Length: 179
Image 1 (cartoon, rainbow, N blue to C red):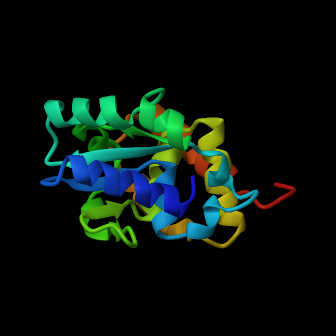
Image 2 (cartoon, rainbow, N blue to C red; image 1 turned 180 degrees about the vertical axis):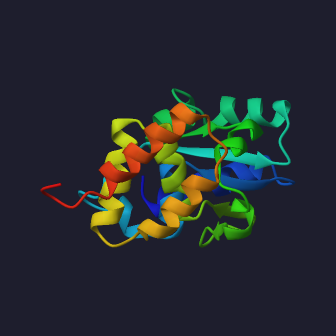
């Protein structure tokens, strides 16, 4: 996924759901801050979906968007990328005040994306290998401040076992080679 593809998806969704704001979540949200991540051998070049949450959310709109722009549909088959619809419940996994830090998506009125540090905190909370690898890439290329990610990760309510796991994921993502 590159910024042009993300913009195309957002504009297409907004044409169908004119009264909705679009929040870009997941890895594709990084394109609002770092469009170059979708180029060449960068990590998002191999991503073919964008996680979107229309606001205000309702199931009828979500279903229409999914049927029109979702995986394996005509839009996906024609363009090679698709939308995954996320529900409001995903917001529980985000750091407090995340809405105050949304980044506008260039060229797309009514669309905003997660701040990279908020995304990184959420990725570390989930703790999948691919998520840790993405955060590590962002850290190694100077795109993240460890202190901010750590603060945001710590601000997300977590059970004790998740605190331990997400702390390990943070250390792994920001480890200096040889540690």
